[in-house]
Image (cartoon, rainbow, N blue to C red):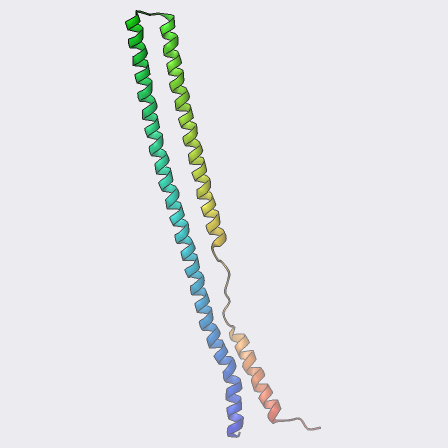
Length: 172
């Protein structure tokens, strides 16, 4: 076997092997990039969830403040009505009707507060679900196949056969 033939064989067989090694490294890099992108997506989603949680805390605090304001206002209105009735010397059904009206106003205000809070929580829950769905769709689950050893061996075998055919021409 001549040196030129040996060099040609080494070059033809070495190229698929080098391509295999490069492909293997590229596959590792692609998998690492995919993992990194998924981590960034998860971090972004968690930041959005944290923002929703802070909004829920604000809604809860506002709900408590509104409840206290409604109760305080109702007590003040009831006390004011009782004092006015006592100062005027009025008793009986008309005072009872005013008191029921004040209680009804308090209950209506409490009902509106509860409905408003429920709607806010429902909106925040939907935001949280949207964040979860978005994260699912943005997460990459693609299988990244690496280079095949079988393809490497087939390529090397083909290269060897081509060299053999070039150097051993068939006789007519």
